[in-house]
Image 1 (cartoon, rainbow, N blue to C red):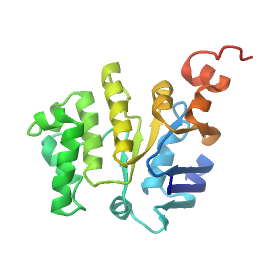
Image 2 (image 1 turned 60 degrees about the horizontal axis):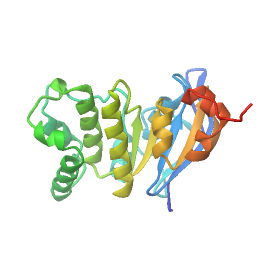
Image 3 (image 1 turned 45 degrees about the horizontal axis):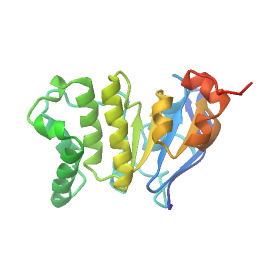
Image 4 (image 1 turned 120 degrees about the vertical axis):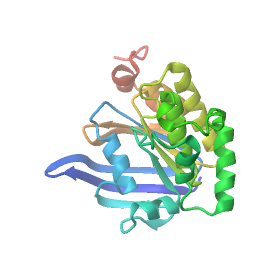
Length: 241
């Protein structure tokens, strides 16, 4: 696996309040990495800082390049994309027009390939391509937000709570699509409160508490850790204690 994203000793503060402290993580090519933790742990803040939405102290490199002086558009052009927790779709625009906005930095030929890829991953979006985004169901809006991010042909897709508020059958579909993205060569950094689902599909995991990583390792090992099982998975590991 080749290195793709490297975050080293990152701190993020809101005024004098430090929301993220001494965070170091990496994501390799063709890898799903998940960050699990409770509400307010700093997960969303970290993703926003990596994307350039928030200022940070520390070092972030992507595809071998230092991102310190790169604005958000440059990060997108380099192959980094974020699907925010609240999706931030244009409700009065059609599905197709929302997707087209995601391709604003790519050539027309690439945009055509991206449309084909997105409609293959999300056939429901193709069926509803002329429908206004604001009239879609919650699950369809999540698919559209992911599809829009994929239109720019990213190397790394960062997903912030993609399963939030969705029915279990839709959540299973979203997680299945994340694994398909890895097979297609897109790495994924997944922030999730649904720890059981995230750990099942991830290669590696980080556990975040109060702005810091308290555990990291292979997802299967993290899932079997008694502390993680009790705090985030809702059960105790047999024989632990």
